[in-house]
Length: 147
Image 1 (cartoon, one colour):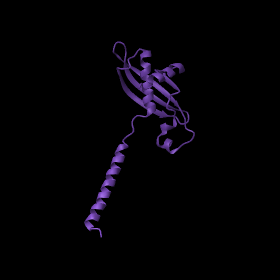
Image 2 (cartoon, one colour):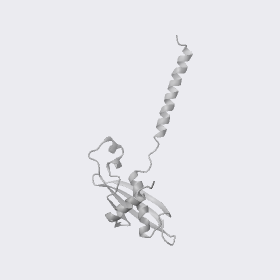
Image 3 (cartoon, helix red, strand yellow):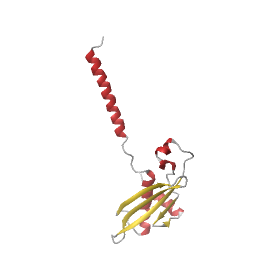
Image 4 (cartoon, one colour):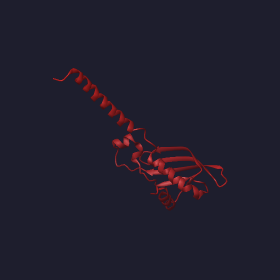
C-alpha cells in the first residue's frame, strides 16, 4: 500500500518536472534571428563597398526589408551609410533578387514564406547600377565566411 503523502508528492514532483522541461524547451526556441537571405545580401554589399570607394568597416545599417513577390522573386532592399575616403557618411542603397525555388507550397513555406526562395541571389543592384554576373560571383566568394 502506497502512503497518501508519497502519492501526493509523486504527483506534484512529476508535474513540476514536466513543467520545467516544457519551459526549458520553449525557451530554447527563442525569437528567430535575421533571415539568411538578408544576412547574405548584407555581406555581399559589404564586399562591394571598396569597389565603389567606400569603407566596409565604417558603416551604419539604416534598413533591411524583404519583399516576397510571389512566384516572381524575393526582393531584399538594404539601406546603409558608409564612410568615404574623407570619412563623410554616404548613403548606399542595394537590392538583392532571389529566385523562387519551391515546387509547391508546403507547411514550411506557409510558416516561413522566405523559405520558398533560393538562398543565393541571382541579381544585385548597388545604387541603381546592376552588378555583372562575374562581379556578383566574385562577391559571393568574398562574402563566404573564412575558416
